[in-house]
Image 1: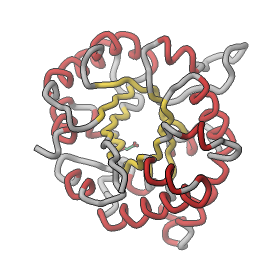
Image 2 (image 1 turned 90 degrees about the vertical axis):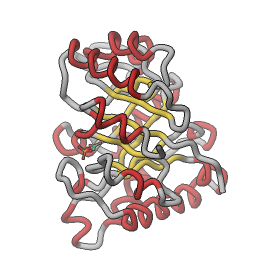
Image 3 (image 1 turned 135 degrees about the vertical axis):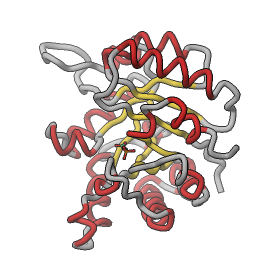
Image 4 (image 1 turned 30 degrees about the horizontal axis):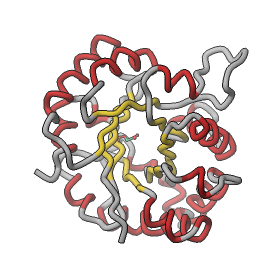
Length: 253
Ligand code: PGA
């Protein structure tokens, strides 16, 4: 069994102006100053990346973006490249979040392009997968995940995927207060790990970190983290408040 270091990641979505983001980051850095047990990442909106990167410098908090565009530069109004994210202080990028799939036309093909662009610039990709409520009810969960993983990771070499992080986010659990039970999460995480093993071999399957996302809160993180294949969490709503998020980061205490 590999020793996978847990990652607790906060996805701030479209919340917080610059001053608000800076203030939350400041509080968080202070509240988790003693943390050495887990990796921590926060993903504020693009406009706050640079000021927040100044705040988290030298702390245990790393910076991530919520999206990127796959071209290195060009006439793509409104888009942001991987190099721009790196220069803004990011080391991680979230790719294929279900809200992007649902509202902004993200597909497995664009996810694949974005993963390639991120890796090229040494950004750690946090690739989101997960089924909708309808898909779960019609017993399509596994086939949805099969497709998202196969297409999303198509034509990627094993050496490209050393830093890959997968986030399992059942769409029905995002922002709804309905968390998957730890047993449901474990079942899917184990399945995702087996898919990685089938496609990329045992070593990557053992080392790849698989986060759970969907209504993670201070009072359910411990139980989720007890599961052998849950390596961390991607937290939305509960990451917006520094104190609440710090309790999730410090779940072992
Ligand atoms: P939630 O969001 O924690 O608010 O459910 C999770 C996510 O969308 O990453």
